Image 1 (cartoon, rainbow, N blue to C red):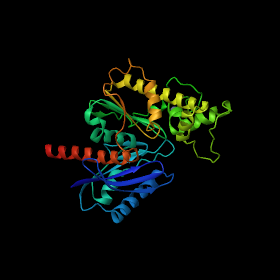
Image 2 (image 1 turned 180 degrees about the vertical axis):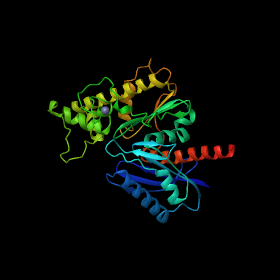
Image 3 (image 1 turned 30 degrees about the vertical axis):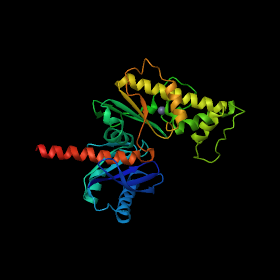
Image 4 (image 1 turned 120 degrees about the vertical axis):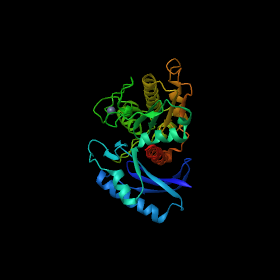
Length: 325
Ligand SMILES: [Zn+2]
């Protein structure tokens, strides 16, 4: 059986696994990374893959390639990891390094574009050539598929739609410097920022703000309290639902998709999903014939599946190109 080694390098964790061509995860192991720069991350990627191969192994399968999904900007064609964020920008030829170290072809992509690739290979994208995948978790970003191709842009930075304003104006400053970006309202970071901004105006709220530095308000707690009628939490949920619905409708106007796929922890709760749907205008959504749907891929493993999907797709392209020559 042919398989792919996949690595999902997130903000503070690294998941390594083996995935077959049908998108089944055969085995996987999780590693913690902490807050690291790219150079340290490369060392962690090497040591984790070595550990995975020696402790878990690949079950005597024929491993064709390694795929790595990374946070930040990634040049998939050149195999370069360009940056984690503007403060951590040390471009590294990661694909060539992994190939030289492990003797297998290696392909890279950004984490959200990887998840979009997984949708194309094994999810809703198997029935659509024009869809958008929007990930709403700690942050917000999207993959846009037009005529079967994922839009990358001139600097591999397409899809950073979290930093667009969506007509919901609580007055919260975003990390990018603007106010009221959708990410500053409807992501995990956004719920926390807005809860802290509005908390003193809702004296009767039962929502407690964590005292510890770096600990965010638990969004599940906000949903639970909103269901019970807590006015602050109802406001937070209503703002976020309208913000996400407006983002969806803006993206629909931009690329004319027939399917909108939502992924990430914020939207996986049925309560929030229903609130988003309720804020969509039927006229704007009339050509989204497959609807606004939740990803069928397990959110805990979307990144890992995405990395495998990138390896599978790029390796097949490579083989097809070689056969032509
Ligand atoms: Zn922003």
